[in-house]
Image (cartoon, rainbow, N blue to C red; front, side, top):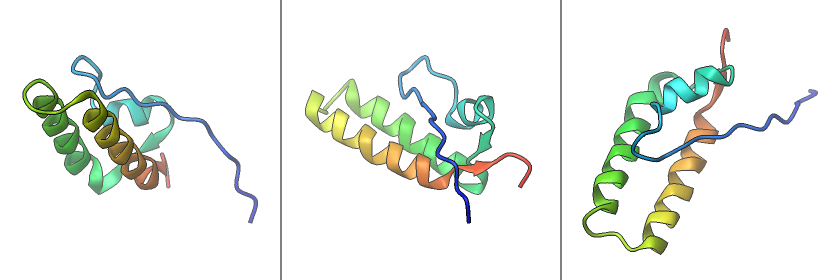
Length: 77
């Protein structure tokens, strides 16, 4: 099995497009996990403005990013 490594980037800021939109722009989809992952991103953003420290916010973003990356599927498959 020949797997090609592909670089993808996601923005998690308030003004960033949805994670699914960002995935599609890069040729991927989050499939049935798109809504759940978007809710995580929104919750993190809301908490960031009220109770999270900068290091907590960074840690949560890294964890969400790992979930996003593991959920990616190429479009058309």
